[in-house]
Amino acid sequence: MPESDVHRLLDFIVHNRLATLEEKQAEFTTRAIDADDQPQVQAAHDVQTESEAASRLFPSFVAGLRYAAGNRGSTQALVFDDADPQQNAMADALIRFLVKSHLATVETEDLGDNHYRYHLTIDWPGLERTATLAHVDLNAALAA
View 1 (cartoon, rainbow, N blue to C red):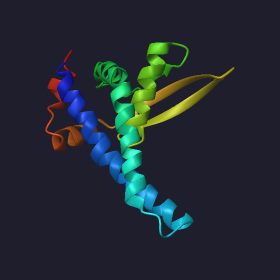
View 2: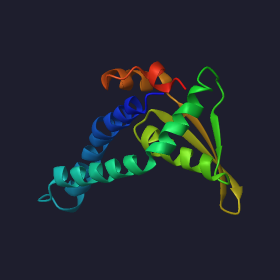
View 3: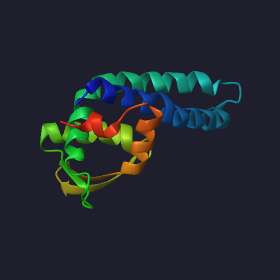
């Protein structure tokens, strides 16, 4: 899989989809707290934080997308168990970047004793549109 394409896709999600959400949230928050604050400054900080997280979580994001691609035609949600460190890392990355940007949904199952199972459903048409906007061939990028 061309990891550079997946990196370009993740970068696009952070700087276009999440940035828009962060700007709206920052504007709402600063208006509620102090009208003189600059929402753009807060949004830029939030996007920087997400960019740093994207760099750190990239290997898990790639692994999660590879896993998801293998299950792409299924109507079943992807299941991740937080007791497995690799599955937990993939879930963290996919939730942070896909769920937060409305490209996936997640349901959390509380198994007790601080143990969770995540049921993640990716919006494949939405992810494909996002990949197209990022100039990424999603099928080629996800080919193992």
